[in-house]
Image 1 (cartoon, helix red, strand yellow):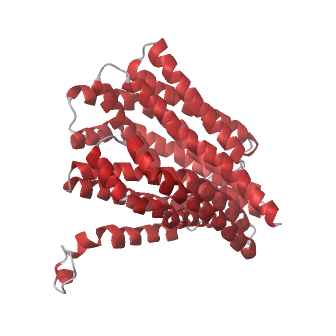
Image 2 (cartoon, helix red, strand yellow):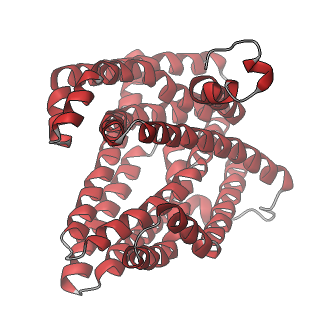
Image 3 (cartoon, rainbow, N blue to C red):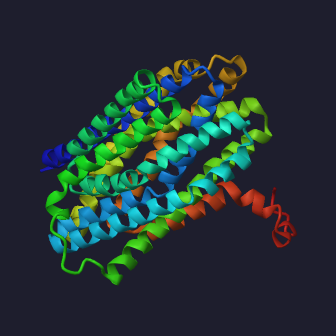
Length: 407
């Protein structure tokens, strides 16, 4: 039974790990294409535009999380009608959010330009890039829902296939549109949009049995309220997490350019760690969610223990790699002596990071499977206040400073 259970975990983890790895490889192709354009403003403008789109999609990645949880739970409870109803609610929500992103495109661009203060050419490139990318917003947000739903159904091999094919098509169209058709920046953005719609079509075909037959009354206030509650809680959690990452950058900026550069280098260790630990978290989401749908407490506990073992083992592998090759990774990321020296001095923290962080990734997956978004929100808010912002708050609240709290 244990061997069968671990094979079930492996069947989710390894395809999702390969799917995750394909994502940064795509970024390398985008960087290569834009980086070989004659104007520096092209690279800067695309970087700003991609940052805006990426942050927007990351904030609403709650759609993916809630879709996985609902999918797994309805799979376990054998409620096909309930599953279709929730899936349609999430699809409708994704399309509404995509429409809002399209409608707010201009003010969002202006906000980024006001903050970044780039030159006119870079600003123009960014606006052109974003104008094309938002055309793919409906497909991109539907992909969050559909891929999340497929993960909850434990169809991770198909998810891997969709993402690898989509990323491959994106990379290929980049070369065709930019070098073959001379479409420039618009070609880079259009390649991504085409890939997003291709992935959406593939995912829709995979779920056509569930999407094809709609309930007589799919609109339900109770279901909508449930979907909005879990997504709003996760959105607050994502905003708090993003605030912490921004806080690190801003605090580093006050300490000088070298510190900012070192932070960016060390954050790559977190990015590498997330590629694997996220895959285990996906397994926890699907398997714990299915057990929750069956209302089987013992199976929930069993899946938590088994995925925790996988998460711990993978974290140990990461820590060992960082211990043996951490300095090499730092040298590969930068050739600036001051940045290298400071980054190496902080390498022990990067080595310990997977052993501490794997609990966070895994428990996120567990609570997504259980549908307990409020716990995720509250723990993130507590972590943000206690771990990042307490000094800022304590040093500015007279009642607290009067008691001599250390700033």
